[in-house]
Image (cartoon, rainbow, N blue to C red; front, side):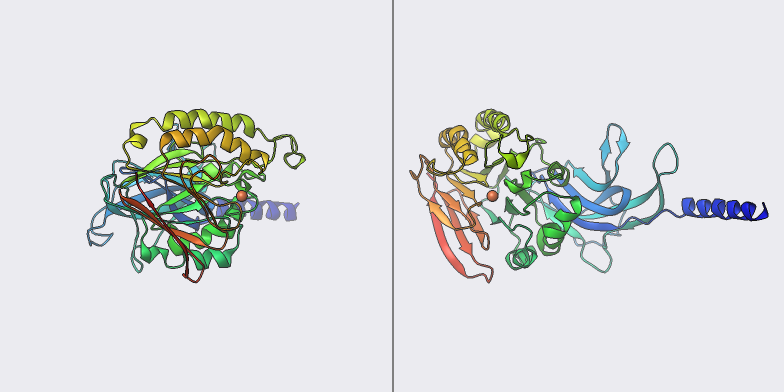
Length: 392
Ligand SMILES: [Fe+2]
């Protein structure tokens, strides 16, 4: 009896000690910044524990981050601050073409009651012994636009490092992942380990990220984490954005085989999805945001081909190519084949050239309202192919 009393007492004390000392939430992966426009951006990161996350913003004016109290932005949903291991804080009301420094925070949660309550130590990104992260917003009046594209990395960290090392210092306006960064959307941890941890180290804290979904990101139990980790303004993987003289259409290729293929086990519904996307595209190319841009670029993981390709490719060509021709696209950038090719106008009914980047190279693109300069480089930085397209 006495023994039972002491055992119960010990368990009660342990429970109190545990409740008073919740695990400390720390940054697990990130931050990276998506959905960057002239006046807004979304900062994303993951944490080791369920936590409440928020961001502080400071101008890039040479002052210490600690000079004044910085404005705080929370992630709110239906009237509540979000508690999660994935954080996406949307910042609005920004100025075009302006660099903002930012700091991310998280606080662990006491989950013992009816409501999760922030509890325990607050941790944050370092702004004391390390330069704060900083992001520049888009500017439609900028005279030029530059970006770097990689694709088909399939989780290979060494090639990811070789192709993105130094990008933070090079400061392109943004970086494009043109699909198949992984082979399979498993867990969030898979995405972190396979390429986002590396991306965060080489550029993603300070350079906006544009992610074009490939057919491999459609696969696996974690496929729906795509928009959780890489949110867009349309809440779909297809959308339009602008920078300088260029408008960009991000298109989602969906799967490459028929929906009935045994590989999908009866779970694929890409026929209807592609039809819905084509309806959206028809409207999007008529928008002022798109039509007013002197340069028009399409980003699509699976390139159009001559109709001898797989089912998904043929459906993309049937549904999207006439619309993109009508839209006056200047250049399309793709991946998927793991091999470089340049499909000139008229290759398969396309009225614009298609540059297909291989799986071990990157494309550096510089755009003015006169031309689109595209240079394909290997992992050592050696120039392999250059194309210059005059804007008509
Ligand atoms: Fe692919």
